Image 1 (cartoon, rainbow, N blue to C red):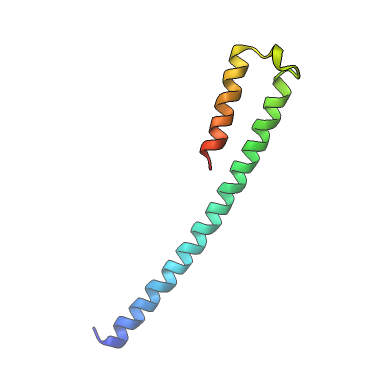
Image 2: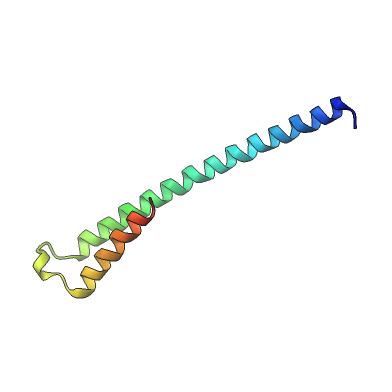
Amino acid sequence: MSEYEHNEHLLDEIQRLRESNFHLREGCEEMKQRIKRLEEAGNALLWYFCPKNTGDISFLQSEAIKQWTKAKEDKL
């Protein structure tokens, strides 16, 4: 393989990697948006189903809140 052919091959590979990088970034942004929507939906459900007075929260509700809070922290 000549130096020219080798350089052409490298340029092709660079272009392929750029395209792959672009698609990965697009996919990453889509996943971030999905996570954001899921988090917003989860927050809405949490506030809908939990009583306004924290003294009225059951053990199971308290555990669900803790798990939800931990899941949101872990995503970071």
